[in-house]
Image 1 (cartoon, rainbow, N blue to C red):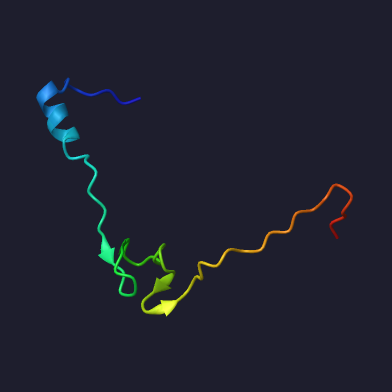
Image 2 (cartoon, rainbow, N blue to C red):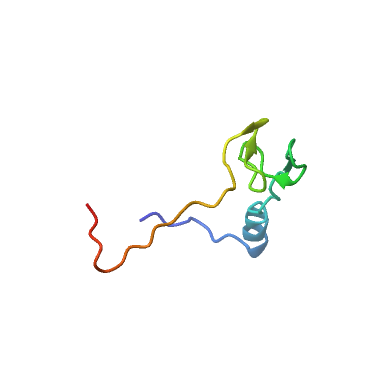
Length: 72
């Protein structure tokens, strides 16, 4: 494997690693409910995207199967 010719100082290592930082996520405002949301993503509060209803927040109906029920 390749070996470094010279050892880097702590200062150079720290200066290089100082560039690896996390940026705060960009936040947009929903045009329908005016809640903060991520851009280019459906609003998690109202389900609208670009002025159209994409996802309804109505609960989905779940069916519980008993042990005797067969799934076909």
